Image (cartoon, rainbow, N blue to C red; front, side, top):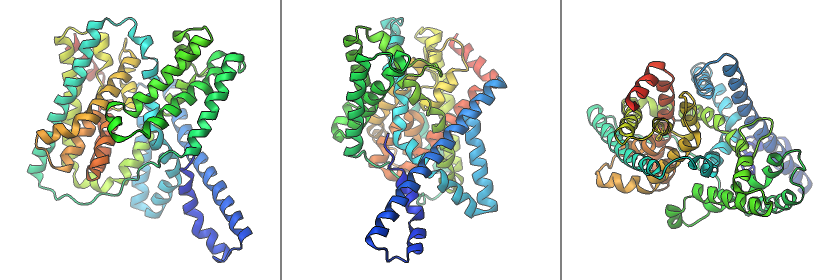
Length: 458
């Protein structure tokens, strides 16, 4: 998907190489040095990202073998965060080196993060077939109304705690923004799209199964949709968010392939997300990164550890109240509007990032993961478009309250929209975004809490 993340590794070794050449390299030496930097950067990126994915994979296997219901990636995140804190206390330079080593992989994950949410949106038509229109309308009302209620409750709680503790706001550690997509990346994926489309039509089982053969084409259509959607004018993004553009791109590609191959849309969507490790589709590849997203939270929180410690009262109080309110209010309103219990369970974690929301609903029987992903994404889109204006109308001007309220009610998408215009709120968004999902996962891992939520749902 492109590796500009490797430039970070290049920067780490530039001074070393310059010292080796004395800073007076000839033209040939300069080219050699550049190549060495490039190779080192790519290798660093591959190893760091590979280790993160390997940790996630091994933890999943271990937890499955031990029949442990707690999200394995969340356990891994706590372990990584603990290691960083211990190293920072005992040998600070080792903590910095540990963080720098994984930096290229973390930057890659954050750059492509929204893309990992898309697969369940693409296959949503398969999940909506058996859902009555009346139930779909109820879900939309709960999602939109729940977003507004959670935003208000969280924002007002943060303001109340801020007034009580009166902690002075200080500058946070700068949060690096992902690099934009280059024309080379766009053209490279366009080439993959065209070549794989032709191959899928002419040799539909060239790679053994249709799912594997269609994978490059459907993956390229998804990635290209995200790249193009990310480059749209800001005004158009409010109406046509990159995630929506991305999902629409993949959907149109599936429609075209289904029509020309005479296999139909439903069959192609089935190949897009097979949920089979032995016969993966494009969606399965993208979903495979969700565990690594959770692991990356450890590095985000460590980077802002001083801020977390200084504003612990505001952050933790607001996030805990927000998470409890969101879960139980969703369960209660679902019962009041007579929404089917299985659908209410599916939208319980509507304010929690997809990676952890899917882990949460897996703890409940009968939940529909596609509905969960759709509810989470729609909540994020609503927050991305309306959080700032709503906070203005509520007269919540404090950046801490605005950041926590936005992230707790509309997770990553709301965070991205708010931070683009209010960078001072970004650190608090990032912290609340991670902690909201973490606390929600811990809460729902407790059997008594799950039973109480099911009792409210009825």
